[in-house]
Length: 261
Length: 352
Image 1 (spheres, rainbow over the protein chains, first blue to last red):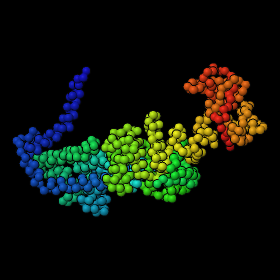
Image 2 (cartoon, rainbow over the protein chains, first blue to last red):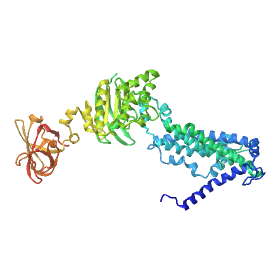
Image 3 (cartoon, one colour):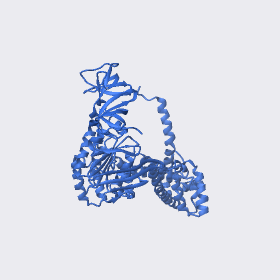
Image 4 (cartoon, each protein chain N blue to C red):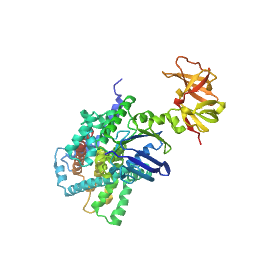
């Protein structure tokens, strides 16, 4: 009775194949010696990695991507944490639509957000490319920050905050010494989610990148339009490794300890 | 260190709803006063006003010679103990207790010593390094108590501190709270909906209803001489009989109630009796006897209470609850007379 049904195993296998197959193809072809994308790889070489790392445009766009992901995420947390706090703390006093307001960026197609930002921020107001990108990505990841931090605040007992105040701790200091430490894991989760979302975004970036400044995913798109060699595969693998590394480091250094401590 | 608290003409509202009206209350230095009432009576609102988490719409609040009315809560110097403990989940027991000392700028070595001494007093020295999540409910409330006491506040306030604990622990903890409060001579306000808890722990009890204090007295007076029908019901006077005096003779008062019920009461037992009044009796203050004396009654359901039987009775004046002796159990349907025991009864002013 405990045997798994063969159809279930087959189904699971198909799903895994579907999920992991493309990755295997990309990783495999990145090591090929051929000058075109092919799978299974022919030969084994690191030349495309060399090529990718030597490519100035990729390197510059990687730096931009990191600046935008870190900057946008921090900006979103800076707005999102107080917003989530206010909504959790004063639910009765605040209008109900506020919660919805902060999820709007998820509901609106990113293409629309990107285009609107281009019209408003870049064209109308004339904000330079990098700040515009950071602003756009902050908007993109804000809903994740508000929701994840909000979920963490929902389990926080605000009477602990009142206890701290009654013991002589001013309200703002109470927020930093009592509230923040107790929603730390939520903030870390929000950071990781937002960082990765920003790092992988195309739709908003495509409108806001400008001459000489591009994010890595946009640079990859541009490259593919012109060349078809495995350099793109190599860059993709590097991007994957980076994403996994960020998650692993955060999980190890901050995420896990906050639960085991 | 210990200071009297006084509220004068305090009102409060949530939006347009009035929750407190013209409330005045004085708590003497070192005194413990309970605010007792059902949920929604304004007792917790009163506590939050004094703590500063709510601003009064009118009136003043003073502690000693300080006017608290507009002082921000973190400057009020009040020890608070919450129903759900409200410990800091990320701090150890010792750090929880030391928190208030840290805010007062006391040196680390000093505050560690003071926190340890306070934990010793509440019997939790062995758990100093634990996190709150690893404590039982009773232990958490002891930590909360230690945390509030260690800052030597001139005023301690308790918001239903024992209602999340089981019955046995509740009784132990209230004795402990009372001992610590007495030993420190701290003025205290204690909010509860549990009459027994309030009476056992307090110097005086304020019974609250609909945003007002209905009666403020010692437990002894409240228990024997409730001032209104509301208080009488609250402290266990289950039988309320509206009556009118028909004749008086040398302190003996003949009074008549609904259904032609007639009783003779003695002013030496009750003090002066007004022409119209409500006779309030506890179940044990109405004794089942042979028919023909007292209030005529037909006995209903009998329940066994250990020291007596309780009877639901039908009388011309309505349904009453009376007690009967254990050695003479009566069957349902029997006719009886209910005699009033003056020491277990009270005279209330007639309802307006």
